[in-house]
Length: 121
Figure 1 (cartoon, rainbow, N blue to C red):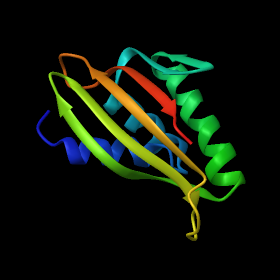
Figure 2 (cartoon, rainbow, N blue to C red):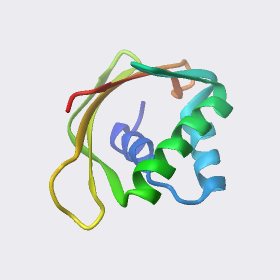
Figure 3 (cartoon, one colour):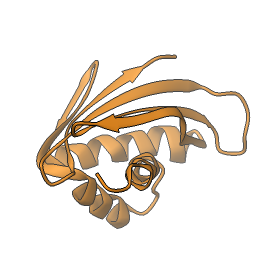
Figure 4 (tube, rainbow, N blue to C red):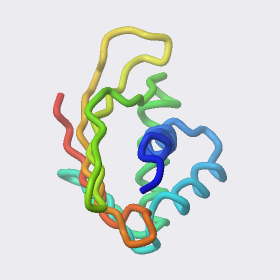
């Protein structure tokens, strides 16, 4: 991984992306073809599944409720893994609504093979 900060920035921003085609392309750039994105109650598989997962989150939390996702702190990576913390808050500012921790396992080509998402608050 040459530029972890840029990779994580793209990862966070795909959840805020209003343009479906840009979102689709970013997912293809970031995730391996048969990647999995796993949360406690959700399992998204492959580009189509991950695209649906990201689009659903965007529609509910960003478009409908006016929130934004942003990097919180704690980015680190080694041995083809990345850990990061993010937060969701109103787009215009205000109190943080949710905090999460994502652990990403990368494939040999540097794209995400498996992403684990934990909601902390």
